[in-house]
Length: 427
Image (tube, rainbow, N blue to C red; front, side, top):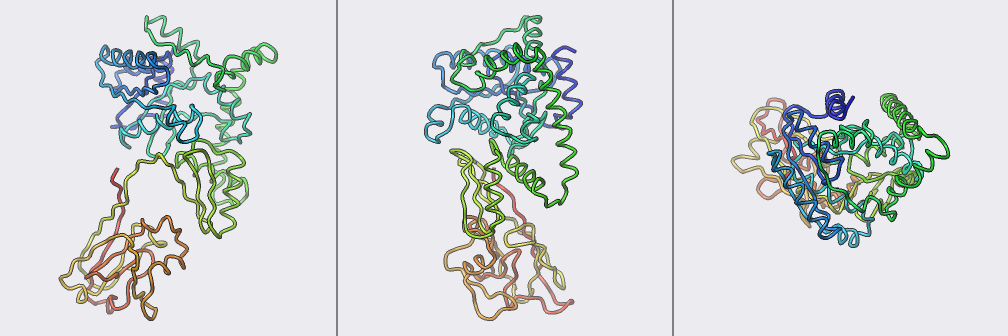
């Protein structure tokens, strides 16, 4: 099976491109990404070419950018190009160049929106290198299973249709079709750990241990991926340590964590189990997990997501609807209010403000909202995202908690104003 047939098979077998999705191809100008672009073009899949100029190699980086622009023009495809000073990003965030470049690429791809699918050109040899790198760091079965054909990283859906194709086949296919590409001299720089694995460690293993070591590792990774899928089905609500580790790793990756090593997972689990106080676990220069009252929160300095925005649905009826919120701030939620008390006044939603007080139904007197949130163990950093519903400048409802005293509906036949609150994001 040649390169284009293998890519077609991967796209179909893994259902990598949902119906109606916009396909964006990350093209560096190197052999792998150029091959992916040509293959998708020959398969008549409409794509947008995306190139990030890392500004790491001076005139060579600019030449790569110009090559990609001309290639897209030749193929009649739209192209998006962006430049980022990756070295400065690494220095300011205390990151390695590889991690800074990856974060810059993900931020660039996120600009295409959540409906986009980003196709990347990782291939079978990249998988083998990843296995050895993960093994050296002490990764578990998830890490050793390698890169999946499709993965959600925050808002990004990344697909990798070439994971089963060796690089020798990619080069052969490019040459056979007369396609040209750019060679990046940094791919031979031994300062990068992956390059040392590629050019030194793997050839040594082939020479001294097993000439077919690459295929053996790929088979092992396939076995691990299949067993990982089975274990995910089996873990369910299991509270075993292994299941909790697996769920936490998945939660980290779902939030866009670059890595989730054994030590980080163990430390975060310990913070969750403690259930008190606030602990910060640094994952790298830009990503961390904050555990407050046993609840983890993922923070990413490069996160560009918008502020929470709330939408109220208001209708008139009778009786009451029980607040559907599971805890403070958990949306959607519903509540009902006495229609005569509301009158013609607007019902509005806003954020928590300093000095806010309310009269909780079922309790005497007025309470500071700050005290209520503390009692309910709402982490301080999350309080700005908690909505409060007001009428005539009085807090009448904290969704997920309770309504205010004096605003309740009188009986099942009492006239009511039903309010439902939902959250959306301005991206």
